[in-house]
Amino acid sequence: RPAREDDRRRVEAVQANQEATNAMGASDTLQKQAELREKALQIWHSLGETAREADTLLQLGIVRSSLGQTQQALPFLQQAADLYGKVGDRVGQAKALNEAGLLCEQAGDTEDAFKEYQQALDLARQAGARSPQVNALTNTARLLNQSGKPREALENLQKALALSDGLSCQGCQGGILVSRGSAYEYLGDTQGAIREYREALKVPEICALDQSAAYNNLGLATLSLGNTDEALDSFQKASAANQVPSVLTNQGIALERLNRLEEALSQYEGALD
Image (cartoon, rainbow, N blue to C red; front, top):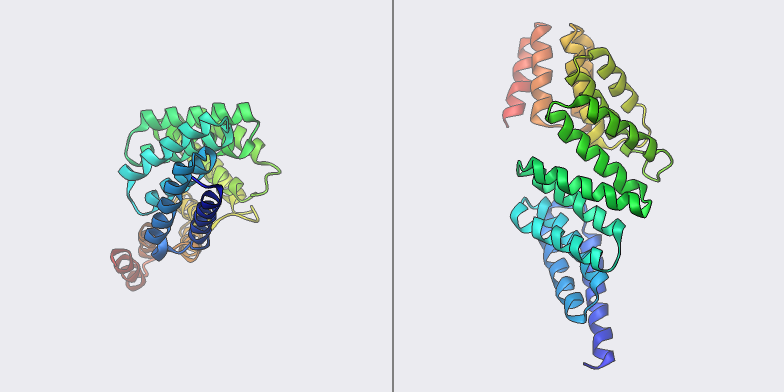
């Protein structure tokens, strides 16, 4: 195959990936993103450019996951991990395994999720890459909480918190602190949980999802202590950050306890919409 033709196809693949990247963040373009990634994937594979093929497989797996196509997404992520391994890219491999673990977790396959996260953690440690280590530790901690092992979860989260210090994305500390709060709740330490949720809300770059979770969990914790007004304020802030049915339901519960029944009914109806 002439070198000039190969160069033309490389440009075509780069353009397809760039177009897909430019469309990221818009949910209505996910299918288009997937099509563009698949186009680029075919080109990189035919050219034998393994590293770029792995990069594209990773992105394609993430897009397919966002489309709710778990069964299609998981093989892409596993292929990406294999190819990253072939080219000696431990960081890329760890990222792909973290994403694969999330899909296993969503599918209810806890054992495989644990394995993916542990392998991702080992590879990231070997590479000295802190960000994928933080992700793997946080993901593992979530499973440990759900498996009734909050003390082990806290150990993982403490390591993740230390590793996250100084990373370019400081907002991830918010999610770690929210998870720590959940672990304290599993231990029956409501005051400890409240402390962690409040610390999470102090993180300057906390993302909307983690901010909403922190406010919602803080509301539930304070509600359990009988602080209904404070709980309602937290639920309202959670809804402002990310309006989801569970938060609206919690607002309704707090309003009902305050005998504000019409407002409570409105929140319950909103949760059903």
